[in-house]
Image (tube, rainbow, N blue to C red; front, side, top):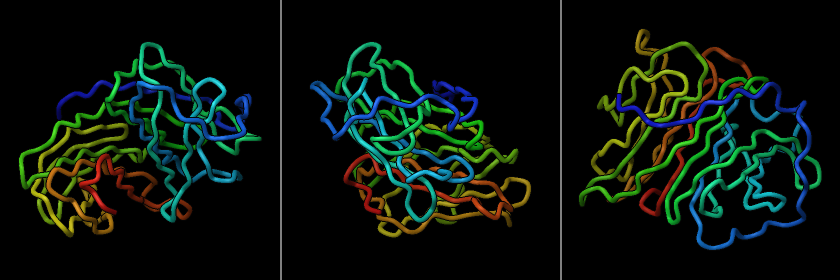
Length: 240
């Protein structure tokens, strides 16, 4: 599998860290901007919190996420572009929250990035990747896969019944794969050594030119956070 540059950072304990400086309102990022998607998919889901992950640029809230029924929080917003842009990711509310992760990033104007939190909530890891938004050929779409399940399995990935990637492990990020557009697309992940252990996404519109990320999180056999998936749409060609 093509190597993708990413950063992997272990945070000692989410809830024991100091608080973020609260900001009263969402504040637009100054121009020029980059687009950032953030996905919180730790296992189990957000504990004893209101269920939001807030993205700060210094003390301003740029955008926030809310978990859906699949217990994965995901959202996309704009952040300032430039060298050494300081971003903080916090869990909680604007008035009361704890720092999940803080770092500086080089953000190229009008580019697209994604930040992922996965693994156990008590010891999460991070992945930061840039997304290639080059349009695929007419009639095609692009999909990449991210494994945030800390299970020790190797995963095969299918679009419908067609295997399109294999051997993905925890913290793997696949390259973008060009696939035919499909009005009823569905992806699935299966344990390479036990194909019966599998989980599929709901059907979605993967239109011509659509670009998306499909995330796997959770743990097989877990009562409180079984394997679950999340589709992150990066452009209007993908309708969930």
